[in-house]
View 1: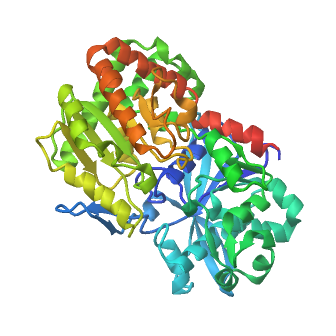
View 2: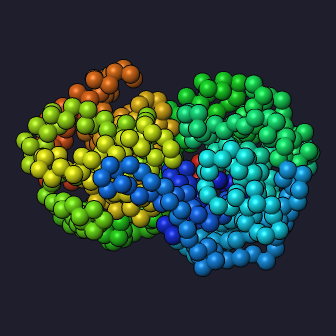
View 3: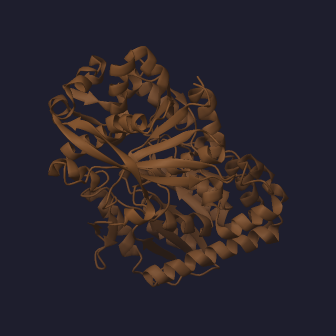
Length: 548
């Protein structure tokens, strides 16, 4: 591939701005950050995704029980996106399907423009079962999901051909985009197809490795596309999307060093490398931190590597910038929940998709001990947010449990759960917390990026050594580990370590040594944010994948 040809980035979700309801969580946010970085770096990239008129879902919690309700998250795409005059057809279930194209232009820090294309099939000429594909992201109906995956993969390839792009690389962001390989195999054969596809896998848990009954795939795919499926991708009469991607890719990566190793053990017959995720620094720094960086680290917006110079920031300037972000978070909490948090209390953030392995309730497993520690230091405040997959009782129960804790206003441990987690909510929590907590069950956290956003804003991490934190943690320098000397399944050991470090290391430092705390904050910016950013990440993709 030469830099004159296009890099086409396929993702079922792309998080650009809060008002464009085309994302559900971390996968989509990473996609948006990746494309922003590609735009900043002037790469010839385009984004390809679907248009969902009802978004993912709007989360509302029952005021009494805290149980999650899912509502349509309708948005007016006609005001936020530009309609492209061209359209095209693909075949689904043996019938022609008309596909409409919409576009959003990302503007890079140097003025470059990168288009993100949204495919829409909610048109009167199409059958109703096809039109449903443009309603909701990650619908629970399997046949609608298959149709969405055909539109993204097969339709995405047709889109780029219709618009006249010379595509050098197709970057499949997770296995949802696997079907993009099929029209390429028909047109170019496997050898050329493999040269053009790179595949990023994002999780070791089953939800990230899609599969469908082969009979259903035959029903919906055009005959020539179905015939192009390699037998290796069919296991127990199910088409395994990850195997389809792996078989047809020249470069495959996990999203942290540890995740690359785990993925290699899952698929030992394939070579799987790793490129650790990052975040888009200019997008995720709070307004007060951006102003501080502009004053002390000129050029950081164009080159996030320069954040390594954060040690030159004055303590007073850092404390002032963080105080503004913390007050902004506290104001938002009061507005959204009526809960009055204090700027003086130590505030811990925990915001991500609710999933059992992420263990949102972990720190509360011995509430009496946590209350004792909190009382010793004048109280602790917790800010939680995150959506559960719809109709998953266990994770909806976790949200309910944490929400009900927020009703106790007299405990030294104060809790708030901010409903309807979104880009805007995340930006406030990662910047306004004093410390970021993450305690997944190892080794199930592929990477995680929320802690990177916190570090960028001078918020140190306190986390299990999984995903990116296994690379980013320098104990007592950038933050702290949880359970470093514990076995992976020894939760009691991890919990005891968490409480001990909180009581004897973290809280005394925060309350009694402001210079020491500021040093940790600056080291987190320099050593974590100075490396774990998408400018570095996209350059790695360029060298390892795009230019190969």
